[in-house]
Every structure is written in structure tokens, then in C-alpha cells.
Length: 334
Length: 300
Image (cartoon, rainbow over all chains, first blue to last red; front, side):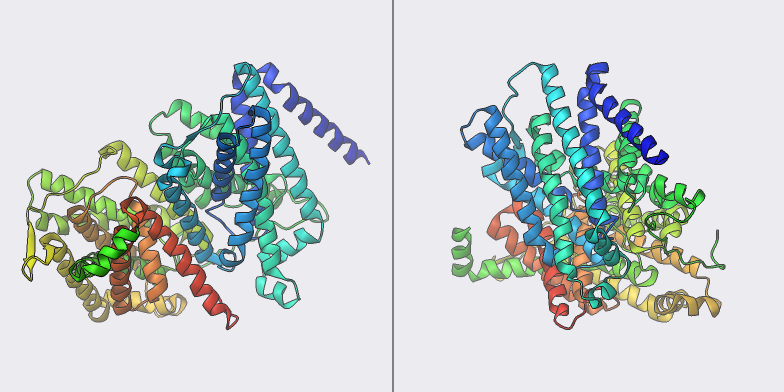
């Protein structure tokens, strides 16, 4: 009972901080919006990568599909800003989910190395096709309609939209993990062959998980496209070497396969990335690559994961963290 | 696109041209793919930074020829330099991920590829660079067929290098140690093979292959900081189709990829050529996997 009270107080404080943040620091409102976007990235990636163990390098595909579908609707529908945007987000969400449903059974049948490289190819192929397709502006990208309103309101509007999306994504994923669905995902991660032998329709579950991730990702793409105002095929919509890797990295930094890990990872990562951008201008991408290496090599279980191994909760944790499958070998150099 | 298709049907010489070009450039792809298959088979690691090593070789040859070295001399130099880089990379980063789960190694080498491509971007600039070989073209069959001498040179060198590698693997002590480690690293270790050194040597050899191939790439096409991933994906595709450890298969698959790419570039236009390569990867993986699925197996 006491713990529940403390938890409620924590959530209230977090919610209050999130709501007043854009008024306290108005010049950072866009930054906060991007932070929420990063939370959506990390949580959706973790649904497939952490909980289900399918390490996708191509989830950015759905982000880009959402961004482009929304921008096309806004350009061609002839509605005003608000209805056009609303319809655009809905169409974007449908398009992204549909793409996941169509691609899912084939792509998710791949495993291990092959899934990782296959999804990587998927993302890059999408970027190249978008960069050559004249209907969606080819290499010069698309611009979204101008937000009708003051510039401060614009940042706040998109911040609250993305905040709501991040909260809904997080709550939905948590809810899903608590039930049978989460157990099935973990079973697939731990041993897919056995899960299938137990009579679980793994392909259906895998596709469904990918669809849920794609649904939220494509909405985030539609909103973020309007926030940025300009959709570039390679540097924004299908930006595999930035957003695409950041998703993975945030989930790992926080702790793969944990509930709060991706959220914490998104905060830590976003701040790190801003620091790199501010102080290492020009070299920030080199620093980002080194950061990936350091995290993967030295810190693979993430913040929440290493907290759990150092200070395990009495009576065990609710859910196991991904085991590290290191082969211990005494003859190798340490 | 339909127009181009009709053109192909009408002019058999054009088909011959595309086929020959495809086979010639396919040899370069096959060379890079052989390096990837070597690392994959021996270390159970997929090197996503493969393409970046190729580009480093290309840059060495570019700056070497600019400094007045003949391109043919610059290629061995590039191989040596990139081999050293590969060895250093193993000693610094790769040895920590080599026997961990496959995802860690893919992500780590992906990070490595970002570091290398961004360093190249900062140090060498984002310009597209090519090496002028000054070799010109060869006209065959009354001008029906034009063969760039550079591509012929690349083809011949790729075959020479491939044969050299096969000899090395069969005849030398280190080659035998590498093959033993590939078969069973634990058994090799028990029998006194220092697998750590074998891994380092394997990665260095892969670096040498990539460096030489990079020189050929710089002479045939161009080098650019962001062009690396294409070579990684091409080699991955070739290895998936050919399987590990068969050089003949790798060569055939390389030629096939070269031909397919040439046709796609001609039919859909050059702007879709990369898109074609990456889509082909996805299609090959998915169809091959579905094929296996009929026997309740999957790619592994």
C-alpha cells in the first residue's frame, strides 16, 4: 500500500513536470518535443527488439511511411490545416500498420543475423526508393503546410501531441506486457522453437507486435514531419544511420526488455546527443559512433539491467533481463 | 522503362555488353564477399564495416596516385595499410564482441562503420573521388562491345587474389590454423592453436582483401564516405546465396549480382540502382527463408 502511494506521488510529479515544462523553459519546447519522440522510438523498438528478441535495424521504415503518408494527404486533400493534419495522421497510422502487416510474415520469419541485416536493407531500400520517386518529391523531399498560429504555440502544440503519444505508447506497451501477449513475446525471445511447439502461433504474434510498434511509430512520423516542416528522404524520414540506430541505442542504454529502461535510455541518450551536438560540432557523428561502440562493448545490459543485477529486488524481479550469452573462455585475453 | 526493354530485345549487342560488364565488376563484389565469408565462417561475426574497409582502401589508392605512385603499385600498399587497420580494429574493439551474441557484434561493427565513414567525411571531405587509370577501352568484335581496360584489370586481379587466398588457406600453417578454428574453435584451442591470434590474422587478411578491392573500386567507379554500406550488403547477399566457404560459389554469385545490377540500372535508371540492390537483399533473404520453411527450417 505504501509503495503504491509513493508510486502515485511519483507519477503525479512526473506529469506535473511534463505539463509545466514548456512554460518554464519556452525556448526548449521543441527539444522537449523531440525527447517525447525519442521515448516513442525507444519504447516501440523495445517491443520487438527487447521483449521479443527480434533486433530490427529497419523500424525507421514505419516512421518514414507515416511522415510521407501524412504529408501527401495534407498536400493533396485540400482540407484546412487541422482537418488535413488529423486525416493525415490517421492515414499515416493505417499505412504504417498495413506495411508491417504485409511485410511481417516474410521478414519476421528471418532470425538472428539475417533478420538484422534484412531489416537494415529494408530501411535503406525505402530511403532510396523515396529519393527516386517523383510523386513524393524525390530527392528534394516534401514540405508540410505551415502551422497556422504563433511560433511559440506551434512548439507547445507539437510538444503536447508528442507527449500524449509517448504516454499512450508507454501505457499501451506496459498493459500489453502484463498480459498473455507479453508472455508470448518473451517466450518467443527465449526459445521460439519451444514456443511454437507449445502451440503458440508465433508468426501471428510476431506480426502483431510489429504492427503495434509500427502503428505508434508511423503516428510519431506524421507528427514529427509537421514539427520539422521538411521531410528529407535520407536525413529525416528513413534516416537509418541517425534515428534508426538511436532507437536501438536508447533501448540498450536504458536496458533492453525492461519496462522503464527504454524511457530512461531515451532521456539519457537525448541529453548526451545534445551535448555532442553543442560541444563537438562537426565531429558529433564520429562521437556518436564511438558512443555506440562503448555502449555495446562495455555496457550491454543497460542502466536498468545493471541496477537489477547489482541490487536485485528481494524475492526476485517481475521479469528477467535478457541473459548475456557470453562464452566464458579462460584461454582468451581478458 | 518499356522503351529500354524494347531496346534490349532489339539489340543483342547491348545484352552482351551488359553481361560482360556484369561479370567483370562481379569479380570485385565476389572478392569483398570472400573476405566477409572468411570472417563470418571463422569468427562467426558479420562485419558491417566491410564496405568502409573497402572505401579506406580506395582512399589510400586515391591519395597514393595523387602523390605520384602508379595505381598498380598503390593497390598492394592499400592492402597492407588496410590489413594493419583491420588488425588494429580487432585488437581494440572486435576481440571483445567476437564470441558474444550475434546482435552485439552486428551493432558494434555498425558503430564502427559509422565512426569510419564519419571520420572519412571529416578528414577527406564528402567529395566523390575517382582514380584516373588512364587505360582507356578495348573495342571487341568491330566495336559491338566496349570493354574498359580498368574493368578487365579488376577482373584479372580479383581472380589472382582469389587464387592466392585459396593457396594460402590450403598450404600455409596459418591457413590451416584458420580453417581449423573455423571448423571448431574449442577443439582448435585444445590442440594448441592460439585462436585469438588466428582471429586477429583473419581480420587482417579480410582487411587486405578489402583494401585491394577498394583500390579496384576507386579505379572502376568512385569512392565516397557514405558508399560503404552498399558493398557490405552486396557481400552479405553473395554469401547468403553462395554459402560459407565455397569460393567458386562466391565467384558465381558475384557475377550474377553484377549482371543483375547492370540490367536493373539499365532498365530502371541509375537512380534506382542502390534501391534495387537493397530490395534484392530483402527479396533473396525472404524467399530463401520461405523455401527452407517448407522443411520447417530457417536460415541460420
